Image (cartoon, rainbow, N blue to C red; front, side, top):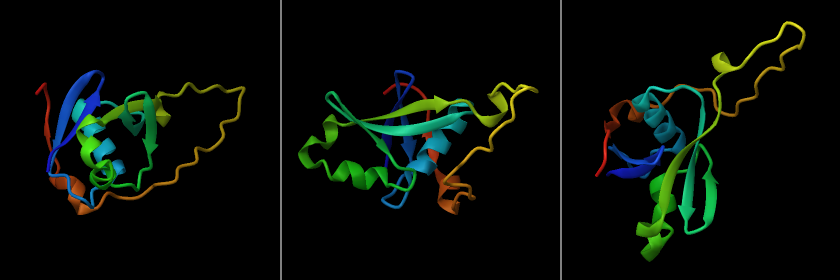
Length: 120
């Protein structure tokens, strides 16, 4: 199945997404496809309402819950911060270790996602 996600104002298509594909897998796939590092989140937008999708959520299942309005819902990849390597360091300020909820290898499914870069 194809999942349409807006990235920097351009609609991108992630192919090979199933009901078990997580938002975390989609975010990582898109970030790799556009060649950027950093912290990202997937946002579900309907009219003026936005909801951040949790990394473990399944975007296909989330969209299916919208029923007849699913085609009006946009998924948006939004950068929420720099990667650890992009953050400025200071010798005078002690760094607090970063807390991350998900530090794990991606399941094999993430390796089969195919990307179409460009406009539809």
